Image 1 (tube, rainbow, N blue to C red):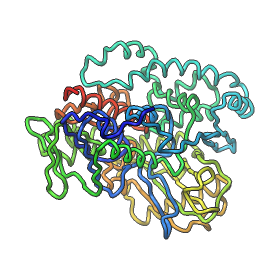
Image 2 (cartoon, one colour):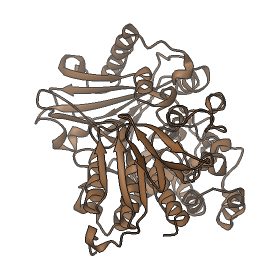
Image 3 (cartoon, rainbow, N blue to C red):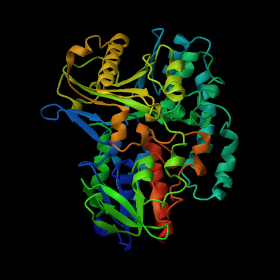
Amino acid sequence: MNKLTETDIRKNGKKVVVVGAGPGGLTAAMLLCAKGFDVTVYEKENQVGGRNAPLSLGRNNEYVFDTGPTFLMMTPILREMFDATGRRLEDYCKVVPLDPMYRLSFPDGKVMDITPDQNRMEAQISRNFPGNEGALKQFMKREGVRFEKMYPCLQKDYSSWTSMVSKPLLKALPHLALGKTLFENLGGYFKDEYLKMCFTFQAKYLGMSPWECPAAFTIIPFIEHHYGIDHVEGGLSEISEAMKRVVCELGGRIELGKGVRKVITGGRRAKGIVLNDGTEVMADAVVLNADFGHAMTTLFDPGVIRKYNVDRLEKKKFSCSTFMLYLAVDKLYDEPHHHVVFADNYRANIEDIARHKRLSQDMSIYVRNASVTDPKLAPKGHSALYVLVPVANQFSGIDWSEALVKQYRDAVITRIEQKTSMKDLSKHITAEIIISPKDWESRAVYRGATFNLGHTVDQMLYLRPRNRFEEVKHCYLVGGGTHPGSGLPTIYESARISAGLVCQDLGI
């Protein structure tokens, strides 16, 4: 493939500003630069990535963590974004396939090392859940059809109601299993409750309960088993660094440490932005990669936002939040790269988070021990442990005081020691960072809902905030709060959709 350079690109004379250098903003910037736009990205932090940025600990920052996403799924979609700029992902990032993809630990002591190898996976199912033999093949066949019909719908924009009667969506309609939940749908394949959990816990990627998540999202476990799960050497934050390089190579600019105070509008049209220092930057189009709820409540003058004003926004359904630990550990544990430990009563734990919005002491925990795969994340013989516990968002009213944070942190460490081979973890932690829902909220994540707006049927497709933002012309949304939703592959798709709409609207 011939690599496009700045001199290869025919400039079109149109200026675009991108608010936020998260995965969606960076992807949109890459694609628009490749189409000849004059693109500048403004990011309030001093590094790119947003929730896909790196965190570091240690005297020399030798322990490196991803802030948020740690599972790279559907890597071919990411490759397509680089292809569109005349580049190869592998020239910028070292992609490492994981097998097993992750370990699941159940309350009764059962352990499943989930693998993309169907024969090995079938053998594990037969051994741990006799009576379910052959169900995986049935699952892959049927869900493969659902994916084939549904995914093209996620790649389209839904800027007008007529998009809801498009041919791809009408063809997909019989496969959406409307009225069914993810957990109910898995009952059509697997008999054992724990085995169903192997293919429904993925609702956590959307911050939802599998007992409420629409059955259409059964495509997520299918995607895992079909495409596998990858890691990027140095952490998934390296993807953001790679995108930054591409934007700059194509003549775009990324301004770090420059937050945006508001979007300039006139006649219900975006005309530019005002930076925190008062500087006005005019543009032909504005791409918003800020957290959706935060953007609606802070980035527009009073009266501009109507459909998503504070009162209406508060009535929307939002995802759960997360309690995060980033641990510098002076020991390397023989634990898998990804490990999910289920709560003793998984459904009750989920209900506490999603419905009752209270703090559950019977918690599910996800631990990433990427140092067993990637030597770049910590000194030799040491670990950079990433721990995530799903908890209720800030609609809960939970007071994350310093005392509660300390108490919950200790409870999480104790559970890890009880449920994994890391029996002496507390003795080997040399430094740590904790992020509570309150901290997420202070970092401009609306109500601390780390996975953004919920993905219920009434908040999908045309009913989700649109890529061509319906409230303000020449303003475009990218990220988890718009269509198609949260998760890296869909965020990349949101950027591709929005970049295409910018081109369409500006006649390029």
